[in-house]
Image (cartoon, rainbow, N blue to C red):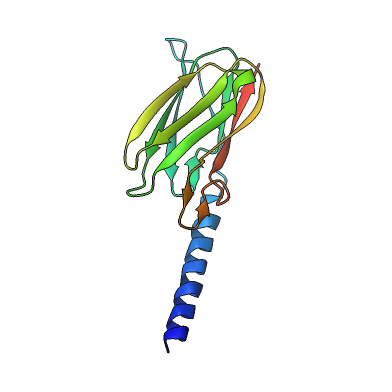
Length: 139
């Protein structure tokens, strides 16, 4: 009987985590940051379990970018990693559950740059669960 209970628990856990991963990988609409009067491109990103929303951000090269990262998780910490120093993008910022932070940078090259969460949880890495997105820098 104990074996059946453990097996059912494992199946339930696997199905639940598969659903969460699938839901997190849904595509959101690309967000094109507009240049504000003060010359800064601003975007708000919702940080949830295994997802960033929007998961595609479009900005202009050589103009400051301010991203507000709003965590809507209650327990699980996340991270924002954008590691392309040759393009002026070298960020590794922890995000506390339920809080928001602002990061500011100025991209110096055009291209598509992936950002992701580098945390590892009970069920594996957040990146492998689909917690990644793209920063597209245009000329």
